[in-house]
Image 1 (cartoon, helix red, strand yellow):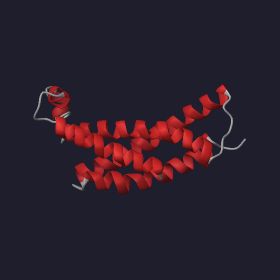
Image 2 (image 1 turned 180 degrees about the vertical axis):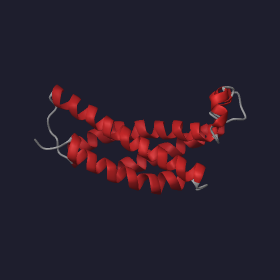
Image 3 (image 1 turned 90 degrees about the horizontal axis):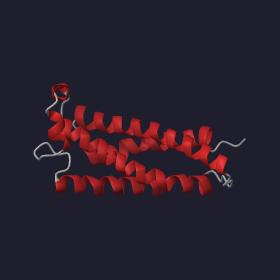
Length: 148
């Protein structure tokens, strides 16, 4: 649950920074404006909003994953081994599982905002997090920290 709070707080904080500084906003000389000059990208609706959602969600995801690996390893699944081989295997499968849930969550947020016209914070804090909590627990239990 603490990881979820960290993820949502980081998302809201970086969303605020992106909006305050105009990062990935189509009106300023940013990456979105530069990318819009490419003809194939003109077909993507709401490109700057989609890029902002992806960037902000990516940053919040990285912060949450860094925190959650250690807490899940030690406290949730009680994996006590710090042997290099074990930690690398767990870390690689943990990041892989989190990448899958990240992609799923980002897709849900983009769908909720771009297609359904819903609120972005609601999509992140409620809809996306329900999906992520379920996916992360199941994948961690069955794949990452499985008992051998």
